[in-house]
Image (cartoon, rainbow, N blue to C red):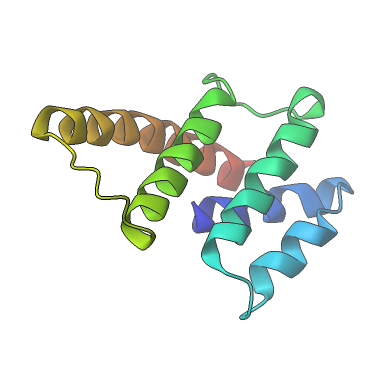
Length: 113
């Protein structure tokens, strides 16, 4: 997702759509990855309706992938004692693969534009 965020910025800048906050966030070595991802998703949400995205999947794919990453990070970083059943973990991974594939397709389109 961080690579997608950088490609997204590279797409916006030549179009005069300055993602200044996002660029600064991505370049900062002190900014946690979770905040970088959150800033990326917020920027996409803010600009989505005005973008020529070339992306046939809804913004929900980017949002869902972010939520899955954030949820799993929170569970791993702050253990709640909750146990995941195999089927639940398998379903989450399957969903993440679908959304990641759509993100990759969008990244390829952004690079080609």
